[in-house]
Amino acid sequence: MRHTELRTQTADLEKLLRCAESGEECSFELNGRRHILYGWGQCDGVFLNIADENGEVLWQAVGRSRSECAGQLQREFFERDSLNL
Image (tube, rainbow, N blue to C red; front, side, top):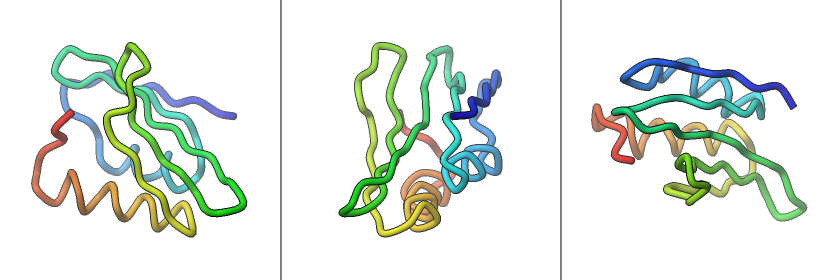
């Protein structure tokens, strides 16, 4: 699994969505806290999580495809112009 690291104070939406759609693990820093975006596929769908630096899952999407989960990420966080983690 590839890993991308984003070191910015605000998450880069395009990079996070690319990671979500490709299945690439992506770590990023937001408001001084470290987060990780990761996903996996199972027989009943695709799961996409954002967890904090302690491993606590802060957000999860379940869909039929990676792009469906990426769409949920975009709608739930970024269309409101904030990532509330």
